Length: 460
Image 1 (cartoon, rainbow, N blue to C red):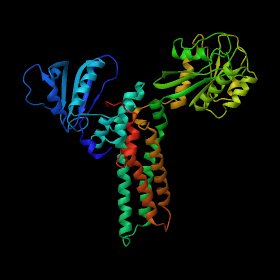
Image 2: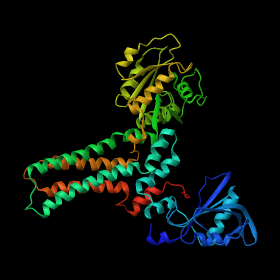
Image 3: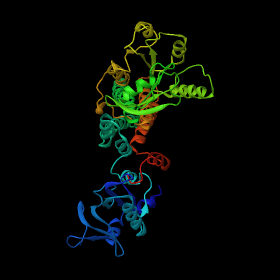
Image 4: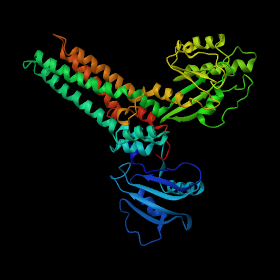
């Protein structure tokens, strides 16, 4: 973003498209109040001055024509979302009314906001750091209560506080080491080197603590991609319907009914799960089956977790064994389906190939809860997901923390090396600190901001 763009007054519709009870047109910038006064006519009392955190009832007028009856909300700088003057026009939630008001404020001198520009201004004006800014979109997109709690922890600054604490610790150690470099006559004895090593080790441990919850945090943010696979007619579509608790996929006794993949989002014990039903893996008899099997294999390759389905009533055959070999390198839960029928597969035969085996009936729902628990345990190893332990969910943050931890560990190892130049240790610590700065946005580029905010909605 060019610096002078921050001086523009911007506007956008901040509510979701479509009909609704309320719609909001938001303005931010130094001309927000001036423009609002030109188009707003107060119905109750005289309007002498807009006070911060005040609401006013009236109409939006275009010349003498009434556009809508509205509530005008005023938030004065710096006590606003963007730390600029902000005006929100709360009108009726029809698209025509919203669009007419937006066109009117643009005609009065506003510029249409770019995606995420309100939040970008909040960051650039110092109201929030970059990690908090990124959490805004996570709050909006959260699909489960657990995901929302993690995002809210990030938004209120819990992750930033932990990162800042580690950063300050690195800077304190750097100050001591650089003092020794600048004043070599003072020297650092072996006892000081041991003390420095211990201090670095503590910070290294804190970085590892943050990273320990990253896997679960990222799954809560992005969802777990689970692919159901198996040979034809083992009950894959029936299992999808059972997990969804509705008839989503067509189920027939005819093998090969499912030709295309079916993907749905479900919640399993607080985890957003993208569940994918695939065509049965078989030797293709025609071009359609060839494409269906190819697509199924592609889905298996991209899965975070595979559910390998076996037909209890038909026994283990060469097709099953071939699939077992195909997915040997994937994280897999084996499911023996159709236990409501006479079983021809023993659980211990499947357990020799997979660490987790669940026996259930997709048709009756028997033991379906055991599969849900197995999926949950895959993510959290049976532990309760706590927002304070899963503050890291963003891939950018994970990559920066991993690099910071790696550099801190190297510095800790170097700190006990005798006759080693302290400059090497300080450089590792500086680089580690720089990685943390990227998370907080103390070091950023225009390209990075564009990449982060391009997925935001225009009015946020």
